[in-house]
Length: 478
Image (cartoon, rainbow, N blue to C red; front, side):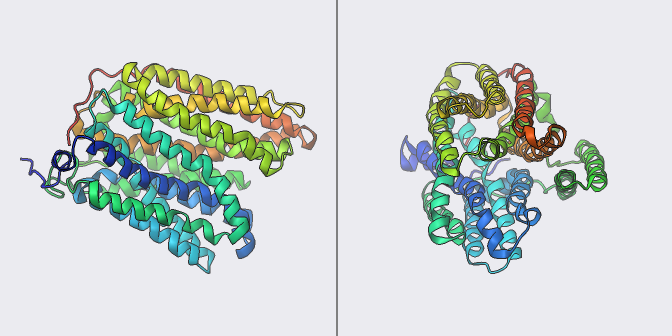
């Protein structure tokens, strides 16, 4: 029997009025902005940080890779944390850990401590990532879910669009330490909002801990080992340690098979395989993985292409990408409203098509290409990205039983993030290989080959997107 919580979403709505759900959305949006800033803005400081600690590229890249690995893995326990501690304590705990990571990282005098704090920030960001989708699916009815995801996406996307530019100014003026402190005001604001608007209740409006199943530690250990072996294997291949890389990739594959077998037998599995009985969710997971590969891979490739192949200074490269960031921020709220009126799978299919077309057009760019044309191709891709973002989670999770929504949100975010982590490494490995094949005189052609790879990968997501058909809408439940 469910034990009602004294501070459920419904109880908080009665206390704060009909507009309470938008205040709730603002709360999780501020927390997400803090985590996304910690993810993206630190990359600007990597060269300065490398000089300060006398690091080689191989060690310096773990500032980003450590964050990404920790974030990917901590998404899966989020449903358990919400069930055990409730919305408010789980959210506040993650935001507090994020703030501690920023404060201690900015004061650190050793690279090992900096790296440890980046891992702590990644763990916090992974816990925070699935919460907004859970809130939207439970606090908003089906006619408002797309609009809510669009408004949330607008706020969140501005962080990576503006963050690197602000970060560059801070690094030049105050050094790399200033980058870590940027998240602290957002963390403080998120904690203040959480205290006012986040319910104590666990998903379902029940008392935290009253129906908590045991955490699947065996499953968590298996998937952690599999992901770490996978990412380290790809890094080893990129670093030309082919034998070690292949052994690690093989070990990752074996561990993943064991993990799936464990999920089939476990009484309380880390991932409920019933999710994949839904054709929409299974297809959405495929889209999320492929889309993550293309998106994160291109995020790595485009700035390198503009500066290394086209020889743009950083200011011009940023000028080309900035309009695309603002177009993306404007597209997402519109796409959210469309997701309430039209089938999300159609918007996802159109979005991945535009994204693939953008990468294919980037492959045609040469030294004589104008900045306006480059900006246009970037804008085209960001329109596609904006159409996908609000629709992917909605299209995947509509039709699921509401009790599966928390785990569905964490699983789809995990899948996308894992695809992104793989995509960055695959793009780096493929680009290096094409440079070797093409030779130093044909660097532009090597980049063109890599853009075609990302275009093909993104186009594959279209096949899965067309299968995202939900049978029935999930009923909101606090």
